[in-house]
Image 1 (cartoon, rainbow, N blue to C red):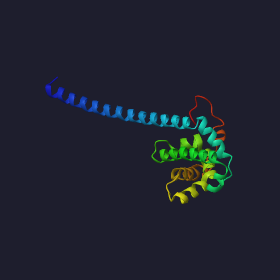
Image 2 (image 1 turned 180 degrees about the vertical axis):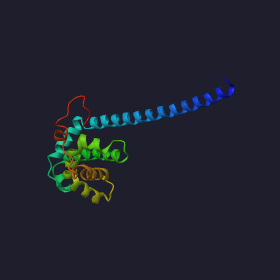
Image 3 (image 1 turned 45 degrees about the horizontal axis):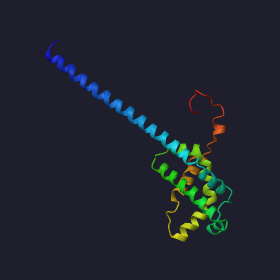
Image 4 (image 1 turned 60 degrees about the vertical axis):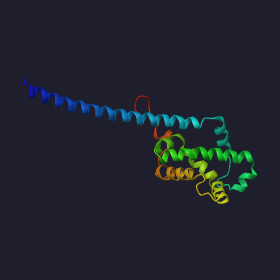
Length: 175
C-alpha cells in the first residue's frame, strides 16, 4: 500500500470518526432532554403530593366558581391562604409549560382537570386582586395555562385517560 493510499484511508477514517462523534452527540442530547422532561414531570407530580397542597386544593375545590375577593375573604384567612398556595403552585406550572421545561400534554395528563377547575374557582378572586393591587401580572401564568389547556386539549375533545387508554396493556407502548 502506498503512502498516498494510507493518507486517503486516514482521511476517510477521520471523517467517519467525526460523523460518529456527531451522531453520538445528537443521541446524548436527545437522552438528556428526555431525562430532563422526566425529572420535571416527577418534580411536578411531587409538588402536588404535599399535605399542605392537598389540603389547600380541597379547600379551593369546595368553593363556588368565580368567587370574588371579598366573598372569598369572608370565608376566613385560611381560605385565602389556600387560594394563594394553589394559584402560585399552578403559576409555576404555567411558566414551566410556556418555557417548554414541561410539555403541555404532560401537564394535561397529570393535572389538566385540576388546573381548569382551580381557575374556574379562583378567577374572580384573581381578577379582583389584580385590580386591588394594580398588578395585572398577578397569577398571569395560571390564566395563560388554563386558557392554553382549554384551547388545545379540552375544546378539541381530548378524551380522559380512562377512555383513551381503555385497551392499554403493559408492554404495548403508551397509546
